[in-house]
Image (cartoon, rainbow, N blue to C red; front, side, top):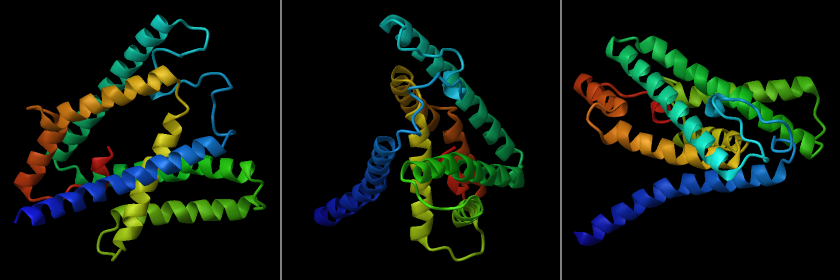
Amino acid sequence: MDGSILESIGVEIIGVMSPVSICMLLVVLIVYSLTSFSSSSGEPIRTAANLVYLETPTDSTSEKIEGSLLNALVFVILIAAVTFLLVLLYYYNFTNFLKNYMRFSAFFVLGVMGGSIFISIIRQFSIPIDAITCLILLFNFTVVGVLSIFAEGIPIPILLRQVYMVLLGIIVAAWFTNLPEWTTWTLLVALALYDLVAVLAPGGPLKILVELASSRDDELPALWRLR
């Protein structure tokens, strides 16, 4: 009995660690290989993750810490507000809107953010490909990804769906490497803490969502796990 429990726990741990390890390895390879993708040498870019403070190399350590904490606070507030909004929409049965929103989010990440990395790979390794072929490949890659994650009533290989879920994580993680160092690490800690609160705390948005879906016997959309 104990052996079967340990064996099942081991399988679950491997099932979680394998995609995470693959994601980390590929992100490191992308960042190491694509010097043109990194924006560290240019002017800092303002995004949702650094709305308040733009870190520069000349700033003091105290300024970087204070600014990164402010960035993390604002970013977590934005994430929490969007999550509560999505839960509210789900509560009032705006299911079709939520599904289309998730599809659009996946399409944007794969097509725009992933397309930028794809173009950087082409430039970095001087791959001979014309613009039309590049657009066709990128469009097919994006559409297949959205369908593999959200298709209903279509038999999709589970391996294909898992591959695209890992690719979503790789693309987002690769883009996060363009953020300044202090902001990146502070955001990682803040998001980890927010996830714990959102899932475990009474009144947490994800806890409310899971309980609401369970009471309705609904299956949550795949990309809810990525928000």
